[in-house]
Image 1 (cartoon, helix red, strand yellow):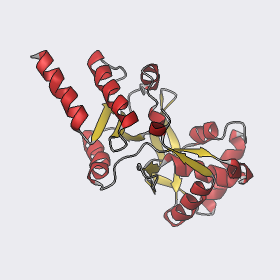
Image 2 (tube, rainbow, N blue to C red):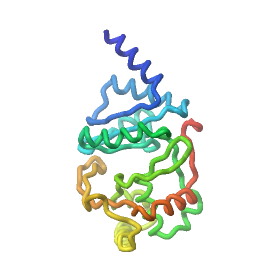
Image 3 (cartoon, one colour):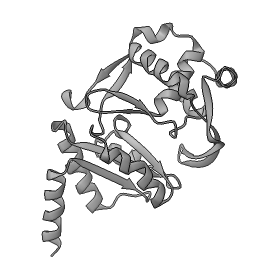
Image 4 (spheres, rainbow, N blue to C red):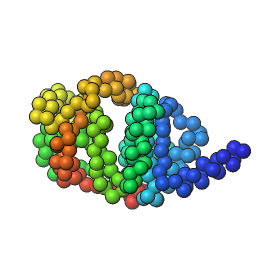
Length: 226
């Protein structure tokens, strides 16, 4: 019976259009590891096969365990959730869209270095909510907020945390950035649960910042270089 069920799972992964990895515990079972390996191996060679990674907010992420499998989830679309209802709200629209979830990765080009610190901070906030498809098209999800320590890591070595904090306040005053639905949001940062001030791009600036983001980044498809 076990072997029959295993064959069904393997066949389903090989025929599906999307693989949804829901991480609701802090560990990966051997069965999960087998399925994840199969899905990510297919993702390297099948541009139409999408992977969506869903993290429970109250559980430490499995990044290290996945990395030991040779899997880098940072290149894929990720969703954070706390309840099954929230998971459904986040995932269903992505599944129903005509364009699949993509694995496009963006790297900074030489133009990025010429940006002012406030613009780099605004782009870091934008990047936290960027969604891409296999064609490299970009949309923005304002529910995926950024926070100070995350932005500081993104701009490591470029400006101090205190300076970033001051620029964030200025960007809020200028209405380029806004807080999320609530000023404070719950995140798991460095495997620590904490409440932080969340930031997202104000609606009227999204289109402008996406254009700037494209200008100072190069798009790469990891599946074409694996």
